[in-house]
Each structure stands twice: as structure tokens, then as C-alpha cells.
Image (spheres, one colour):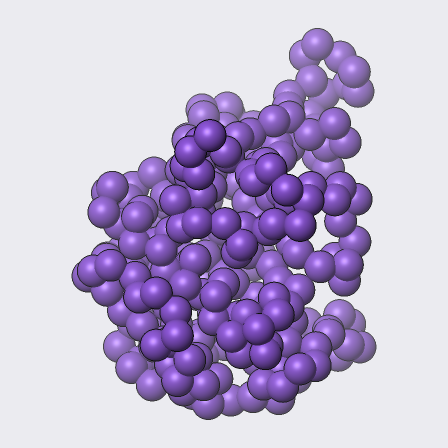
Amino acid sequence: MAAASVARLVPSKHPMIALGEPDSPAQEQLHWVLVYGSSHSQRLGDLPAEVTREFLELVSTKTSRLFDRPSVKAVFAFESVGDHFGPTVAHPHGQLIGLPFVPRRLTLAPTADSCPVCESVIRRDLTVMITNHALVQVPPWSRLPFEMIIMPVAHRPDLASLSAKEITSMADCLHTGLQLCRLTHRGEMPPYLINVMQAPKGDTSHHLRVELVPLHKDERTLKRPGGMELGLGIYLNPLLPEVAAGILREVLPDVRRCPA
């Protein structure tokens, strides 16, 4: 089987959210599982970039279909890797959930006449790599040492609004970011989260971003959220974003570069 045909969507047997009476034929299926790979030991970062692209394409297609439902206001897709997050299924997988509300963290409040994500593109000191269509950057608001965002260079609200070249660049940049996580953790993949942050339904001011949030420091140790982080949402990042971006740029030559 070709690498680009191993990803698929299946309904969750244990949905986190559902609308309607339990076990009723009228109940809406809002929670889906993204399955990829044929090995329990391989995660998205271990598979070819083509699988990462298919992951994003599946999220794009399912998001558009869920937005056809009046009850769905936002769609969140993610992959969590590592025992820290308590996965209940050993096989590598992501998840996609249609939400009847807009989560507070999904959007970054724009100013009156600008997009905060578009503005961050000019921060060359935070940029790890940039192509004609997408870029990898350490966000100025990074919560953890090597948090990265992957985003289209042009202002695009969601995956469905990307051209074929843009979604390929996004997938390749996400794949590269995952390899950078491994290289900055002495060759071992740290626990990480991938958050696909698409626009809520009808919000064109939102700038699509994929958050890549690994839980490691600039040595072979982990940075786990503590009391301040979980209690107040105030993150104590031990590494300046500019320094983290510099470390990631240093190891970038060891990773296959994204095509322009």
C-alpha cells in the first residue's frame, strides 16, 4: 500500500462530545479518529511527509462537511503523543471534533486593522524556515521551549482555503518541524501535541496555524506544565523564543528542507 493511502477517518467509539440522546439514531456524530500507519510504534512524525499531507487533507474535507451542520461552530483536530497525555489506544492516531461553540484559545484576537499572525511573519529572529507558501516559526507567545507554529504565508482562514501547493508546503513544514523536535531531543521524539487551529465557521479574520508543542527543553529533559500553568494559564518558559528559534535553525540542515 502506498504511503499516501494509509490515513483514514473513522467514527469514535467513545465520543468526547455528541448532540442528541445517547444511542439515538438522531444523535450527531461529532468526534472522529484519524488513523494512519500500520505499526503501533510509528507516529505521524515517523511516517513520510505524504502521510502528513493526507492527514491535513482529511481534516480539511471533514471540517467542510461538519460546517454544513448548523450545530457546528468550530472544528478542532489534534494528535497527542506520549504517556503524559494518557492515550487510551496504542495505535497511532489523531482526533477531530466538531464543537457547538468557539473555544477561547482557537482565535488570536486581531487588532482593528491587522492580523497578529500576519504581523509575526516579519519576525525573522523567530522564523526557523520559510518557503514561498508556508513557514515554521517559534511564536513570541510560546508556552514551552520548542513550541512551533506552521502557517501559510498568505492569510488563509482554514485548510480548505489552501491551494494544492500551499497544503503541500504546510504538510512538509509540519513534517520538518517534527524532525526538529527529534533532533533537539538527542535523536528521540519527545511527547508532543499537534493542534490544527482553523477558523471558526465564517471567520475570515482568523489566520490558519498548526501548533506543534513538544514537551522538551534544550537538553534531554522534559518541561511539564506545573501549578502556575494549569492553575492560572501563565506559562513559565525557561527558553527565550529567539534563542529557541536559533537552536532550531542550527539543526535545520540535518533535516530535509521543505520545497519552495
